[in-house]
Amino acid sequence: MNSFTEENYLKTIYKFSTAANKGVSTNTIASKLNTKASSVTDMLKKLATKSLINYKKYYGVTLTNKGEQIALTIIRNHRLWEVFLVEKLNFKWDEVHELAEELEHIKSEKLINSLDAFLNFPTNDPHGDPIPNKNGKVKNLTMVNLSKLKINEEGVFIHVKDSSNKFLKYLSKNELEIGKKIKVIDIEPFDNSFKIAYGNQQLILSESVVKNIYIQN
Image (cartoon, rainbow, N blue to C red; front, top):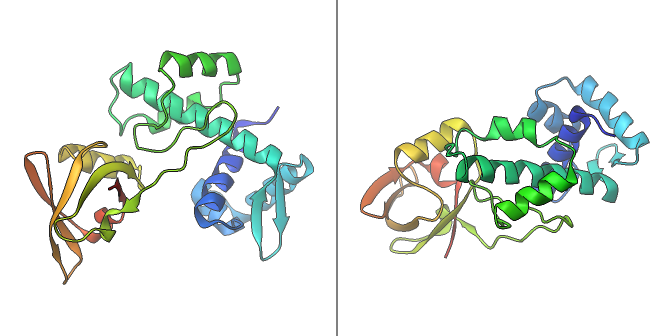
């Protein structure tokens, strides 16, 4: 059985290697997990002895098939618990991440499969991230960054890149939520800010906010 720390390492490696489509550096892992590079090296050696990772100097860390399946299980657990907390217990989407970080390590396949069925087999979590199914299959999201849209183009808000409490609270304060249709009204060339319309509202988004919003059009 793997420890919570080992599972967090596998989850982190999966997320970064998938996003970059290459191996993950020890410095990246250390930064994400807020730990020392020397501690990361020790843990990677431990994971390698369990045949959960591959590591090549200068090429970074990747997961073995076994390691990937464990990572996908943890991610599935995490995202299902987030859906449960939001839909059934009325938590806000900026309140669930830390709770799900604790709940994701519960090792009961029966519980998670029952939770999945109870929630009617959701395909995405409250932040728009796809939920792996019980076989570890992940739905590919067809989406583009909001910055790719031109004036008068529109799309449905389906995903946030930054799921920090601070960013989600900013979106909630402005009632800009997953599922809303966004239309680009104007783009300011000087600072690349976007003026958007959604529902009956309009809002000016900074470039950093725009880069964290993904839409389907």
